[in-house]
Length: 289
Image (cartoon, rainbow, N blue to C red; front, side, top):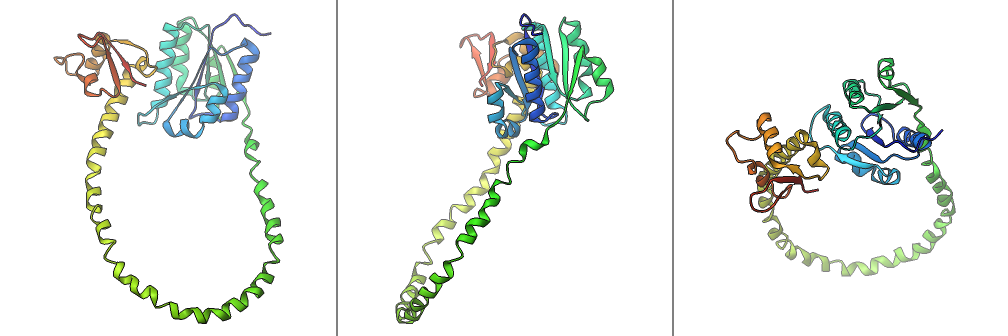
């Protein structure tokens, strides 16, 4: 029976389950609740680009994690789930993952009044994980969906049709006999060595490329600093406005911002990534998505 009176959050650990399992889970949610009001998939940049058509088709919002680390995507999902439980207050939170590391998160979300339902991939989910959720479903991975690729094998038939080409080669034989008459024109290309010095100017820009690694290091350092801020303040990654004072307090406690530094210092350091308002004496900040 479909219960359409509940607000549902559908959160996917994209590193942990196959795409067909995700689609099966979403269909089950539609069948039982009629809708998935919040749909998010936590992944890295490469996955978001590779699976963007799949994400669009299912209406999943990609939460891209740029941080480097084994469990960085799991941490991003956990932080976002707690934020949703407090701000959006969904009745049901659906976690699509076979990872047992989410056990503490499930217990904490239940304390917040949420009903927890899990979906995992068959063969990857331990018994300990299943017992933590209020309801858990194991779904089989259908690896046969990638089978359509054998279609290109029809090409050999076209090659057989091309077999008559040997007849064309016989017709080309007289042309080869005429070729010696054209050889006197061959000395013309000998004049081309004079053009050899021309490519030398092209070699001049090559040394300039050696300077490129310098700004790359700086951009990598900036990206790491921005990712560290987003990991501590997950609401910023959603493009929401955040209280500047509260954000600065978190950054100072984490050691990213000196205790005596102004609250705007770190955010003004990366104007392309963060917005402050109002312009004079700002009191709010958000991530410029």
